[in-house]
Image 1 (cartoon, rainbow, N blue to C red):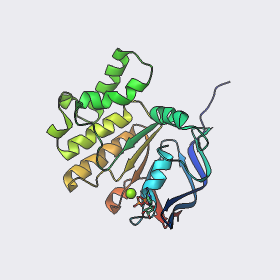
Image 2: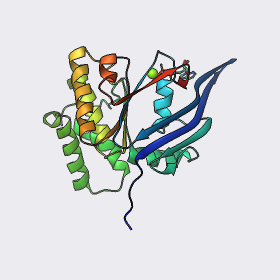
Image 3: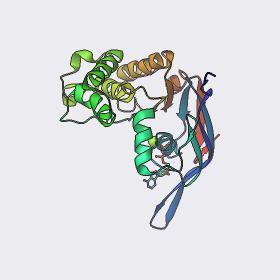
Image 4: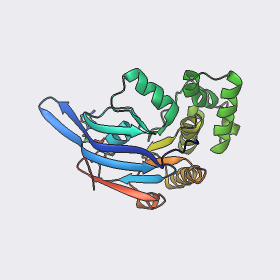
Length: 227
Ligand code: ADP
Ligand code: MG
């Protein structure tokens, strides 16, 4: 019997998350339901403070919900321990941040290789994946540079290479063009589009309607809810 993967890559069921500071409780996510299919390209939009980053952090296993269920690639992940979550995150998720988050004293090549060092693979295999990822984002010619020697757009390309080098099932990007001028922003979004054409499942937070229009579906949020 052949195993056919389910068309649903992930499902959130009644996810809630609140932040408590002093006497204030902020309900960042309120009974959120969301399904993303394998190979889908989804944009998340909504006003500042509506819960987009919180949602992406939960999708990326960087944060845990207070209640609700999260099933990723057939596995319930809401109840995993921190170590288990880190393992699933390392293998299944690629995360791209607004501020690139590259490590300044590592070269481009070392930055992209870093997440792969937590996985058991030969140095040759790792090196091959790093080269392929840098090639995909057009940055192989800068492999020996340090982040500070690159433009913002180039740094974000390297961050995307780092996110896809391990072949994640899901690529998450939180306002990836937020710190870029429009020319670089356009080229980063074109790159995400290209990765999607090649089969990557993508979920991107963006304020820009031109960019959310590039996705197959837009999820709009307001006050911690998905509309
Ligand atoms: P968005 O990304 O849409 O701007 P966030 O998910 O960052 O929204 O935040 C949702 C809400 O939760 C906001 O009201 C924000 O102030 C609050 N919030 C986010 N992170 C924290 C935190 N670490 N501590 C307290 N409140 C937070
Ligand atoms: Mg945000």
